Length: 340
Image 1 (cartoon, one colour):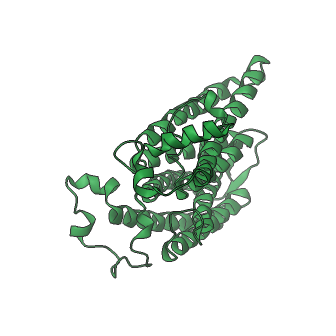
Image 2 (cartoon, helix red, strand yellow):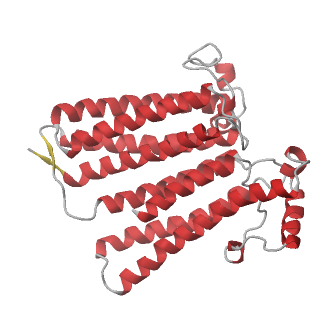
Image 3 (spheres, one colour):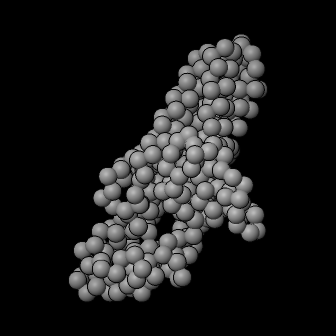
């Protein structure tokens, strides 16, 4: 649970790092020595000079001074430090409990899998940053989306394992236990897809266009020559801001429909934790859709100090909260649901 909470915080700090254009402020990957920030004026100046060599500084912030650089550096440094902290908080107790023989055999591969995902995430993070250091002023949106998706997988995996520990709390189902489980798992899969597409929206700044709802530029479905204008056609799914925003909306509607159907099904055919969990999932989905619409309509600017910066971060945070409650609902039904 503690690791999951830290990953949640990591994602929020990562969102702030992106919104403040801070992600490229540290242009080197030093997993060990990089834990310390510059400690002298000369070290700060050297780090600033390194940042001045990349396209982002030259094209976006040519007038930035050292104080401005320290601000964006602080966000990226905090993000990386949290990543290191999560690794320590996970690995040290894992070694301790393993050495003392306190880990059930069935738990070991799951925990090793999460540890491997964490190690992969560190490499993917640098792979993402490296994409923005040459010939670009921001990171590649597909790499950003993959980075966010792996964070979501780690977060969900921690909750899945935690939700399977301790005594079972039976959730009574009168009818359709298999259906309830299947729909809960389907919602979980679609939420992962939505998080990935949300990463593409963020990377493309697709939320800064078509800032109306429920229509996009006056229509519900944009014309084909707009949605599929890039060649080859598949590149529209990752490179066309209109297409990416459109699919982000459509997936939200799909999640809403599935969550509503799951709520009705649980209300009619289950009781206890299964029914309450379905209500909690639907409530979180409603909240997230409302935040998404507000962020879109109010046109979230991508820089620090923007009037609605907190709104965009709330949208990202509640997105992770949706993932949390959906994960726990699916885990609960997979483990505890029994026919009555």
